[in-house]
Length: 400
View 1: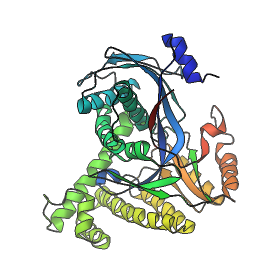
View 2 (view 1 turned 90 degrees about the vertical axis):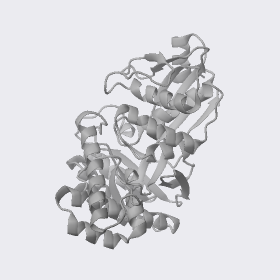
View 3 (view 1 turned 180 degrees about the horizontal axis):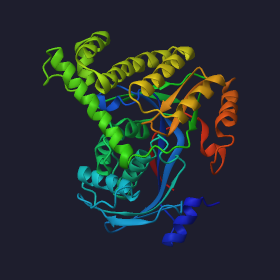
View 4 (view 1 turned 30 degrees about the vertical axis):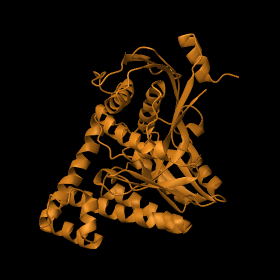
């Protein structure tokens, strides 16, 4: 029996697809807004993913459509310098991936494609990076290229700047290099992905706030402003500590040269207002990631949950990216029996993630359903907005 991808492809192009590229979304368990500060983060690839059915072409055209009629088909030429569509057009993510891959590997053949996604859009679950990774694999597969997963992740992290958002590389790394049954510590410069098995009985509930977390317009300006503030705060602390600015280019460099407590004390001495808050979040969140990995390896669910709670408080108070809907979801999840809950993703909308034992996860889901979603206007099924995440395999491409 044909899938909707195969059926749509045949109807659109008159032939069956030959390959399938797929890339998962992700939920970041802890370590928010610190990847671009150079500090490790702790995400998990999930079962929601972007799938691209494609067929290589003999020329350099890319023709792409989706199974969702809300997104218009697009087409463009493969090349090193591809002119962007209007700001916010979904096709720019395809162009970002193709341009970045061509610049790295010199590929020439395009492809016909139909795209399907089960990753909620603008939910903080990395739907855009999953699309970029899957598109890069489709182009690579059309040219018989087999890029290394981590090398591809680094390339696509740079490539996504095409759409105007400056990220740190976490999303691409876990989408490309995730392992089934595992979360992962993702480190940067160089990019590394270290799998950490998720203990049996740990369940992570993802719940959407029904507020989209856009990466364009005012939201993008807000994210980029916070990044600039973290960089300015770092520069001031480095000068205050009389460290060599040429040797301390990231928070990782800073914390290799001093302790977290000394760094925080320095911040208190030379920063104020938003700069102090941003600095405090980055330093304390980095420490929480280290402790969270140890908690997962030691199967300490309560310890991991406590760190998630601390992370949410820091994101709400110091980084100021929470909103009332996210705070409500976090509170309801804890009331339902979650040992920890926090916003996940960039914030200003999107999702929370809550940790609960398998015996309690049903109560958490019920509390969120009754306390948050009941009476609110939302479309589709509840599973479109809330689900139990499964630690899943990273991206792949194969013949159909």
